[in-house]
Image 1 (cartoon, each protein chain N blue to C red):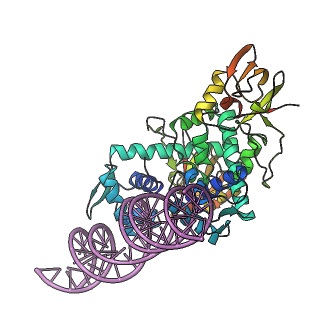
Image 2: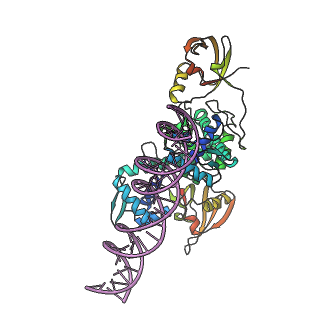
Length: 218
Length: 218
DNA sequence: CTTATTTTTTAGTCAAGGCTAAAAAATAAT
DNA sequence: ATTATTTTTTAGCCTTGACTAAAAAATAAG
């Protein structure tokens, strides 16, 4: 059994090595955990002792198969709980992260199995992120960023890259959620800004908005 | 915000002062928390500093109004989650305690409000224990112990005093659950044992069984 | 009303998980 | 190829919540 702190480190490292390739730096871990590098060093040394990750002094950390398994279990729990909060309790997608952050640490295999069944074994969470199955396998999707589309193309929103409450609330205000169809009416090559159409509304979005929204284009 | 350890102490003291009258002894707290008296002393001193309870050296502890409020909130959460686990996820009533013990520490008022609504604002948990409302008020019930009934009387099971998995499993085996009607066919005054009827079955039960089952008799 | 026993508290440790300050290694800049 | 700078680690300390052993208070027994 792993402590709350250990689980949170494992999850953070897992997410970090999704984006960056190779070993994850101690500083990156500390930053993402909102703590000091010295604390992160202590923790990765402990997790290395427990064979959860491989760690080379001054070189960084990389989760072992064991570590990845622990991480995907936590991610699975987090995302299933998010589905529960939105689908069953009627929460809004920008309100669930914090609560799921707590619920993901509840220990009970039976609970997860039953929760999954109760929710109809969803493949994606309310933000469009894939929910790993009980073996830790993620459903592969060929999604791209809205910013990669050009004029006259369109896509269906399938998820977000950034999921801060601010960003999600912006999307809400613009009536964009999972499943929303987005038409690109124009694109400015200088700054990457776009004019898009959502439902009957047309409006301008900055590059920053466009490169944090995933769309599917088939 | 209170730590996990603090919340568990508060809850334990709350339950202890339900049964025993007056202040709760440090030893009783230690025993119920499965820890040593010295640890309990440390904790009650800390909780007294925080005005959660009043503590007099060598005399024991008593929750303040503030402390009782915290405790009932935790009890409310625990029991609501138990209803969720049984009613929605199909768990058996003897399997839910451990999981609810974890879920009761999730912090979110909105979550509890929505969970309560989702479950239809139940007044009792799967063991027949009353669920306090959002103001901390328990529904009053005039239940008595099965052992208090005499020959030819009957009652409807409304709860259990003891809720160990062993006891609950015994009740299951005998097909006794909340709502089950129980007829007392005979009672032995020497040892308090009884012969009872449940559905079409008649069988013998010891005093120990009878005095851990609550019934309503109106 | 003393002595014995039980209960409770105090004093001193320990592990987990943080922190700061300083040292050491790696990387960048002259 | 040396400095300078950044990154990472080490060393030492703090808090929380546990523990053991010993002291002190309360209660029971003679």
